[in-house]
Image (cartoon, rainbow, N blue to C red; front, side, top):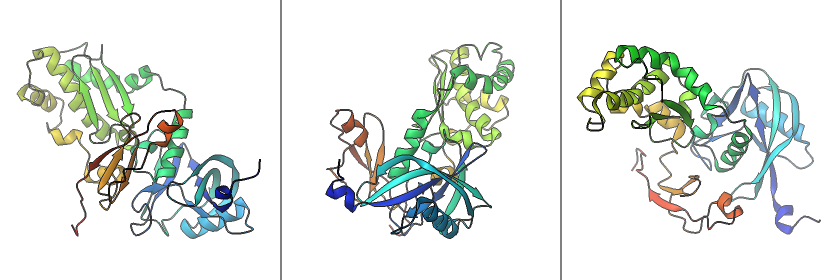
Length: 310
């Protein structure tokens, strides 16, 4: 089938997927550019007559100051919304230490941690593609990661069987806080961002959530969620009781929230995908839901503009 007129007018852009020891390299776009402040895989437009290898080699030399050793086949291709670009993601092997020569910052993240970042639209589509392809991590393996801590706190709190009936999962959809708990069921959900945090930070957030379960088991449903009983349990475990401890630090918010220039959030109520704009765009629809035969309508909410000039 011959390409359509639209396809002939699209400009190919290579996005380099660089993976080292299980971590992927992402770069934060300069604030003055389109999608400024959002995170992306490094790369750029393919010049006329260039091969994929030559384009990747040129772009990564300019952006990261590294040498390209190998370029794989295209893994994923997507038309960038609102532009004449088609972004093609391919595996790239490099030599040298990447430097932020054109980006605001660089960061190495796990596959699971990708969706915890404020990614550019096409890069988010690729991240979702990768995460969907991951084998499901058994819940028991996550529980086992934290079981020693739960056993330790259970002894301190007078609940030696605390870990029994507690389930812990990571969720990339948990963004406004780092942890959430349902005390009656013992279900604790942690933000996927915590997989990139220090063990001490993970333990602190988990303790604040586990203390809700313990308070419920010791005092019943009448206990205040952040009341005196909960505070005492957190202190006994060696942490300072604070609602903010389970919320994001300033650096964590910088990594996961969109830049302040985007004042309107457009969220899909079905799959929770999000886009941002400086004004409400009523015509936008969720591409994933449209492809599934759903209306794809987005809920528009005004965000607090954190710009220092506002």
